[in-house]
Length: 259
Image (cartoon, helix red, strand yellow):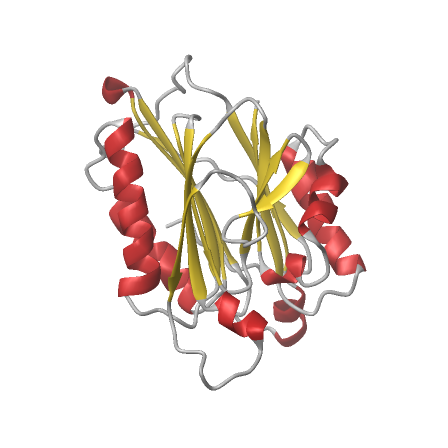
C-alpha cells in the first residue's frame, strides 16, 4: 500500500489517497483545515542501469474522518530494504482506530519509535513526516535519509545538533557502531524523532533520500526551491540538481507545502 519501485530513469508522480476511517469511501477535504500540498519525484538511476529492485520507496497517504474533524497525511521516503519495512510497519499501525488530533499525535510518536527502534530494523534508512489537521507534525529519520524544515527561509534538520529550534526532539541510538571510527556512520545509526506545531513561519518540508543530501547542504536545498510555489516542480528541481551534481545514491524526495 503506497509503495512503488520505479524502473525508469526519471519518473514524476502525484499520489493522493482520500478515504474515510473504513477505507472504502472517498470524501472531500474538510474546508476549515490548513491546506497541505505536496510533490514527489525520483530518479531511479541505479535500477535503470542494472535492472535491480533497488529503488527508494516513496509513500504518500491521506486519511480523513469528518465525524472526528480529523485529517492525517503520511509522507515517507525509504530505501528498498529495511527502510521500506519500517514505513510499512508505520502505515499498518498508524491509521488503525484513529481518534482525535491529540491522540493521533501521541500515537504517531509511539509508532514511529517502535517502527525504528523496538523492531530492531537498525540497518534501514528512512525519513517520514505525519501532518495532523495541517496544524501539527511528527517527523522521524534514520540513516542517510533526512527531513529538513524551512522556516522563514532558514533550514532546520531534525536531529541536527546545530539546530536551535524549540522542538520536542529526541534522539535514540539504534545500533552499535563500535566497529567503525566514522562519526557520520554513528550519527546515521540514530533515530531522530520530532513533534512540532506548524506556525506562520513554516513554509515547507523536504523529505529526501541520501542521494539528495550527499551532494547538497540543507540550506542549499532550501534556497534552490524556496521561490517555487508548485511542490511538484520543486521536488523535480531538487532531484535533478542532485543528479547534475553526480550523486552516487538513489535520488528521491517529497516537498510538502503549507498554504
